[in-house]
Amino acid sequence: MKIKRQKTAKKVISFYRYNYGFREPFQILLDGTFCQAALKNKIQIKEQMPKYLMGEIHLCTTNCVLKELESLGKELYGAKLIAQRFQVRNCAHLKNPEGASACLLSMVKNKNVHHYFVATQDQQLTMKIKKLPEVPLIYIIQNTMVLEKPSPKSIAQVSLLHRDLFVPVHQQQTIQHLKEEKGLVKKSEFQHKKRKRKGGPNPLSCLKRKGKPSQQPTEEKKQKRSRKKRRIAHSSATSKETHQV
Ligand SMILES: [Zn+2]
Image (cartoon, rainbow, N blue to C red):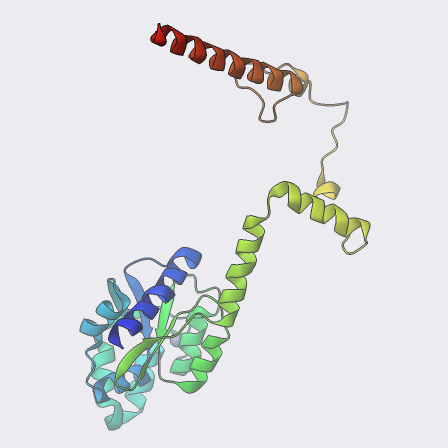
């Protein structure tokens, strides 16, 4: 069971590494609810989380989370002590602290540029994060930490990206032309934006190229190449003959 859990986590981490550029040390943004659950379930976050995520981590929180824990008093005193040991990351609410949930959401909702993992037991925050792309989510369930699978938004975003990558450029152009013919899209912006030069083409572009050959081989070059191939084949054949002799 433990091995399966670890394997799943590894897959999820790889997904974020390769598709969204997550790197070690992983930035884990925690709230009071997660600290409280860790305390209750005797989970040592600092020791267990790097093992589970198979990499170095930075545990961090925000001022709003600490302020909220302070305001909740005795019941969350233990959680507050844990959270106080984390690095405090700047949020946008320095003068007017927000609720922890709203604060953490604001830290990740704009494309999660700092590559935060969010560790929370807050149901509402969890629901909102599951709707975002690019935000790994960690929670505690049955005495263990669980890294949630990538959200449908993340998966859709990544597959779209891959689809575009796998269609060769010339095919993309053909698709674009067909769409234009059928009136599905307006003429491509590329065509509109194409600069018109006054006074004919750039004279430098009309000069014959020296040195490097152009990328698209002309008929003449193709012929030359095939002649060359033939010559190589011929010479290797003759060399074989001489060896045999
Ligand atoms: Zn804040």
